[in-house]
Image (cartoon, rainbow, N blue to C red; front, side, top):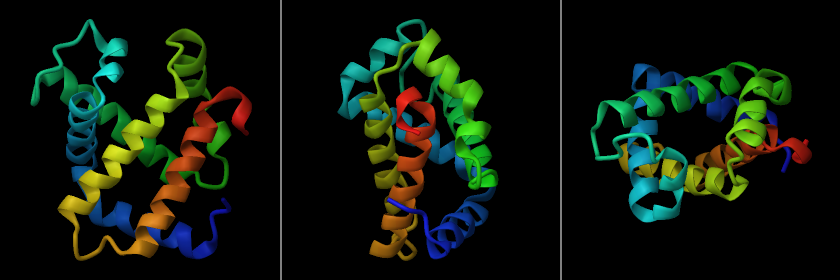
Length: 142
């Protein structure tokens, strides 16, 4: 999947619209992921995973910051996300499938909050972008 100029523009425009609420949506997506896919909790046994907990909000903000970094460095995702790749792949040993589950829940969350904006073309652009982010986080995918 190639990110075309229209995809890049759509992702950047949505990110501008999300503004300071990115962390709110990524936190909701994490909560959805934990509820819909309980196996994802295994990486967070040391955290309070109850909805709205400070620890889930803090991790949601980390996800938001990483995605914002990715939006700001669309021309070099592997370079921009190299520290996160090292952490998640080598230290934490996160199964790449778990990223896909989180992405699914993020798309659901954004569609719920922005139904008028969440066209099939925006969904496709976001899916491409998030697939590239996942590829940048998984050692042998880029």
